[in-house]
Length: 161
Image 1 (cartoon, rainbow, N blue to C red):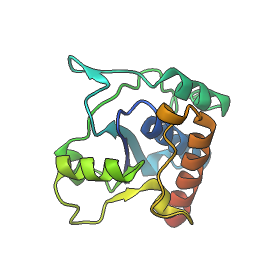
Image 2 (cartoon, one colour):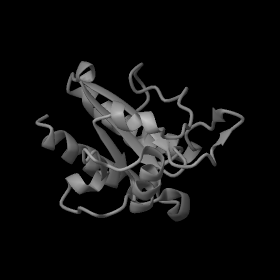
Image 3 (cartoon, rainbow, N blue to C red):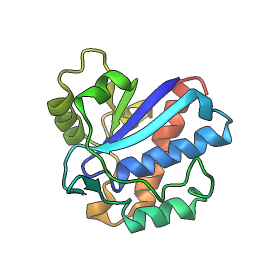
């Protein structure tokens, strides 16, 4: 089983979009038994009294626009923000961050990346080192979706799927 954790600042836009885009791709390829896919935040800004906020409504709308969320495997209605933990480093094979700040903040939580698990999602594309566009600031969820789709496609190709 390949375990993938997507990470962004709040776990309400980029990382859950990534989680559900990859889940959709995996499901369409008949690979759900081969993957465990989740997402998390580096901050606690979207977590109140131990309960995380749901995916930001415009991010939900962008996922729905692409038909994601219509199956039991891709249903994101119960998704809540959570913070990455030190234990996540040992559990997941890939900790894929939306931008370099997320890498820095993830490593503050998990400790050093001795196994080379922490990367940018776009490192798998022909745009290594690039950040996924942050729709929280740009308002452009279509651009974010395009970046995520490109990254997830490239990840699956690297993994041989």
